[in-house]
Length: 419
Image 1 (cartoon, helix red, strand yellow):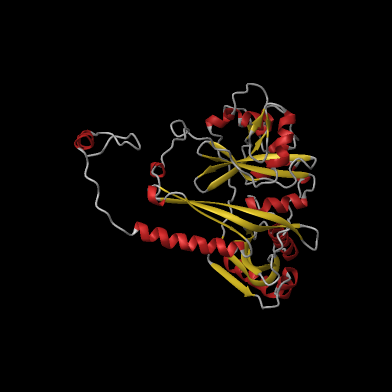
Image 2: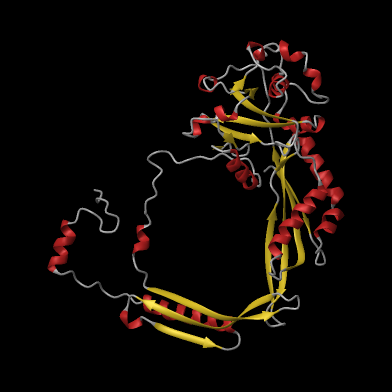
């Protein structure tokens, strides 16, 4: 983060929409100034609010503070959209105060805009296909050595304007169809950040972009129009130092075939690139996966794929432990919802010291939680006074001393002692 600005709320600021609109001009000016100074920025908003609710007793007013964040955005892909920002905050606040929790906004503490410098990836001239990718026969890499139109050629290849044969790799075959694409105001080579603008100007085309990282295929851009338009194109970005180059993915199934033992065609999720053996299984998966950002599934490597218990310190008994259980009844609210009201509790203090083991305290009546915390404080003081007494260690028996001196392995973790 290289910059931020905060707008503080007054005591009577409780409505998020009114608060954002009240500061709309200042927010817009701050955003535009940051973008002009840095060309492109990555930014996010955060908001802190104070909530209150009425407890079981009408005089018992509870307060809490919550902070909400919006996902980071980039100024080249996401123009400042204050109505959308208001809507996102409102949805998060409803999720916090909903489900009969009773929490109500008492004050907007602040709204903060944070930003940092962002340098989007740029495409470049031709890069040969890596051998391990070429062997899959899954992509079309148009050999555009004389221009920077690899994005346009790859999109046209994904639209199947050239059906098959050696001609699919020749730029000359695509130039006659390039007028099919509306590239007004979009530079060539096409930055990754300009693909959203391309989709807006070409309403029949959606574009996903994949990337190679450590010989793994990962999604770096997934279109919100994926599979909703006449043409959907998957592009694979190749890299060579600071240079980037688009290619067209003709078969996702072959491209990610190394991820499955299934020998036939697979049906691949565009969001996480996980292959499925049947299309109906993929359709069930998509309904859940599409709710999340593009992601890569990474499995543990051999040798690191076995979970072992290593918290050996938790095998030792603690001197004292307290177990508590509450009883409560349901109380109807004005909106016909129910509130659990505690009516009593029982707490048992257990100890490794026989003389202090199994101390029971039960309570039923008014102000249950006050009595519970008061009991916890009393037990804390009692236990501290017991543990503060230092007693000399009991001498080892002859047998215990021999066993101790001859030991070569830790009795807790079964590891050999180091020098």
